[in-house]
Picture 1 (cartoon, helix red, strand yellow):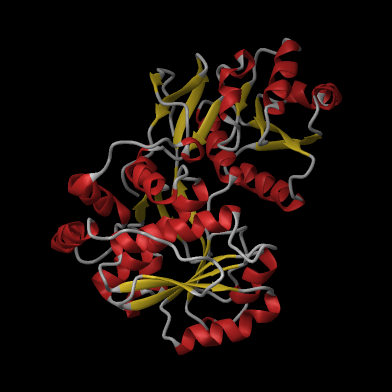
Picture 2 (cartoon, helix red, strand yellow):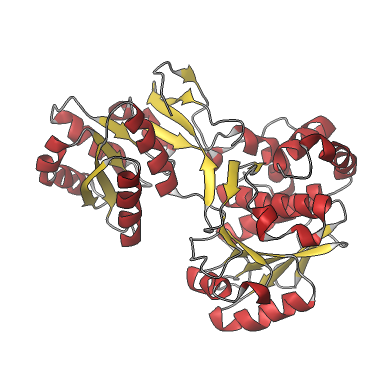
Length: 410
């Protein structure tokens, strides 16, 4: 990605800060449906009549989730899409799990067209996996969508692919060694690497990373391998704790490494990220590019020390297409987890509508054309990862300013 440093004003938020918009009505729903799935169903125009027909039916759907203490289903007819989650200590789906469930419910209500429905299944532990998957197969489930603890999802993913439906994972990434397992969610590391690659295009290729103490060690290796594979030099990683004093100490201890760097990548979900950047800039080294991530909280954009920082992230426009309806149905703002829940159902229901349940196979799911959902443009790969296209922003004037929009297609 070649970056032209000509900033254009952009709303300073991602999915995590969506506010209700004015995208109601049949016209907005048609737009949403056109964006929801790009599939190899001949040509996009071949899917057009199907999209219009669904749009006429959407207005009759009202999403009313039942209490979490009963077995839940959304929709009544068609092929089952099984959503696997774990209830909290209260016996209810809580926090992100509730958001995923409600995003899936909204998605099936708008896109299922009475050809697919969602069944929500509580799985208490990895030991419960075999019985739950056998039951799903017995109901002819076409797809598993998991938002479970990593060990439980990994137990599902480890099952032979001919003994379970395809698996879309919305939680922490799990190995896809048995095939037909796809990790849909893009994380902070994906954002970081996209930003670093943009810096590489301008000739800055010597990268020093600052990360919170609790960043998993596996992320270190992923960063190092990806930076080297892209032609850069991975200088190392400096860990910091969540106090200003600890952040300043981490910068002081890293001065020798900073002298050999031309790019500083700062990971973290805290305002301490700008403390790190401010301490580095105070040292007077002038040849550094600064890369942030999509995990940076929005208040960091208002810190003067963050000016000039690059951040790669999903554009918020796609999610704004459903944010008003999500707010209206569930009385809370759309979250990233809910948006991923919606997109998982958009993928499945789009394939079912155009190719039938048998179309939910590895060939179709890994179509090189990919999918455009409310979480942006992406495609699933045989290795089980999501190849996602992000937009590039620079922080200035207390907000994000777009430098390079994500491409319209692969």
